[in-house]
Length: 132
Image (tube, rainbow, N blue to C red; front, side, top):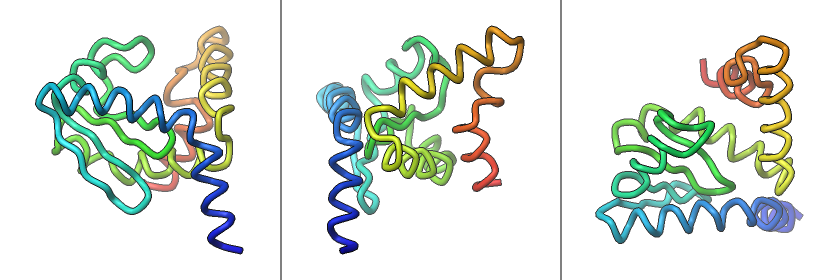
């Protein structure tokens, strides 16, 4: 039963994992690196670093998670952010393709109400609460 649950979690998050693999793949052909940590594929460097500097809403981020992929500017940032990003992997396993729309709806609602759309976002609060 556990294997079936794991398989479902991987498939449920797969649409966003594919996006992360796409960005990470571009990173690889532009000098980036990749490694696997458990069920997560981690990319850093190359185009991934550029993506994190310029992509709307995450511009300036050290790392970001898409499904079962974590994209980081560099190895040091990946190591520093890994625990936080792994909380987001578990969130993708629960929310699947709905994670990004839900995240963005919270972001918009918080921004419109004058709150911090990143730090007050419940997905981020959970990640910070669980990782200290």
